[in-house]
Amino acid sequence: MANKIVFPKNFIWGSATASYQIEGAWNKHGKGESTWDRFTHTPGKIRNNDNGDVANDHYNLWKKDIALMKKLGLQSYRFSIAWPRVLPAGRGKVNQKGIDFYSKLVDGLLKAGITPFATLNHWDIPQTLEDEGGWPVRSTGDAFVEFTDVITRALGDRVKSWITHNEPAVVAWLGYELGVHAPGLKDPKLSLLAAHHLLVSHGQAVPVIRSNSKDAEAGITLNIGWKVPASNSRMDMDSARLDDGRWFRWFADPVYGRGYPADMVEYFTKLGGLPNGLDFVKPGDMETIATPTDFMGLNYYGRNLHRVDDPKNDPQIFFPHPKTPEHWTEMDWENYPQGLTGVLSRVYFNYNPLKIYLTENGASYSTGPDENGNVPDVHRTNYLRTHFEAAHRAIQAGVPLAGYFVWSLMDNFEWSFGYAQRFGIVWVNFETQERILKDSAKWYKAVIKKNGF
Image 1: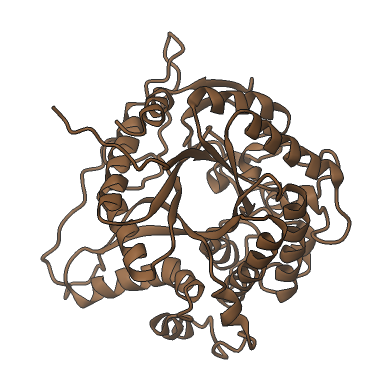
Image 2: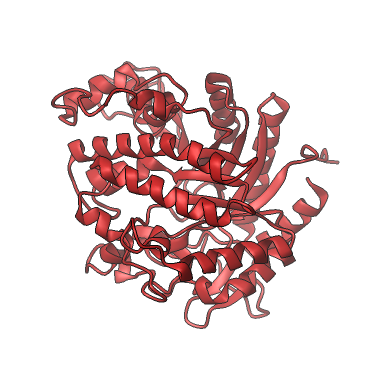
């Protein structure tokens, strides 16, 4: 008989979404245009030219969605606040209807016994700020602090868990260097400026959150993969190290007071992204970025195996699993739960955060309803089961993992992939807005109830 896995007594089970991906109502009730509104309305940027104008219509159907969460037994719900819904121009005039929406949402969650967990910036910043230069200019960070002040004054009496930024690496590299996310720019110098100002604004926002939300906890969410060299060749090991440095250490090191990693400064200099070194770092910036936080949020999806194709490379390599649905998700990401134990342990023992939340973990599989109206998404259920086991192993090793937010509550708009990828534990028909609990959601409900399986 398999061993029963039981999580710590106060462990938090939740699910997560992001404003642009589910809310819709992109220009309703005083909301300003976001960078993602502009980006998705530009032909050719998104698969099938999809956009989030309606998405899950959560702006109108939030009561139905809270009822779904309650049915699932969710203990916490991680959502993000659309900055342009609150401050349409990014700063200055407040849109009270935007604040009212989030206030009603928070009240509804609390009434259902669900703890609200808010992310301030999940990528959809006001287009007016982007027109002024976006994250590569320092004033955007100042506007973010103003936004933080406005919304935490409004909700801070009820919301006690706050994330400043979600995956700043994705904003910087995919938005300003590779151009596949909003605002769609391709300039390595701008991307490094963006990364720095995101981090500075994080450090500036934390004390504002604490001032406006008594006894609140504040942190940042970083994306992390299990970066593995395919062999012990220098080239493979360097590739894995640099990939980890770009996506994780460049952000985690300064947040934990270590400054920017020297190997990555050298790397970015060679790439041409730092023509004048770190001249954009102003006095006090690094101290601000290192403002102590209450937790680290981590988003984990899989392993990145590094194999540099060179004839001199050491041939002693190992290969990933065959590309079957069991081992690969439809995002073409490897299902590698062992890596979750690895990253949780590595982050805790390297950086020593007070606690860690797994703020996103999940898988994309497109299994739809069968003739009986059930969604038998076996692969997602297996993905979650094996990752929960991996998280439990990390807890046993001493990692202070405090909660787990499955991505995502519902199928939604998946950024540059449009509606072509489905991460939800709830099936959504985007034409009728029907919601159906998938089998993975029913299984998750039982896990929450038992605090294990």
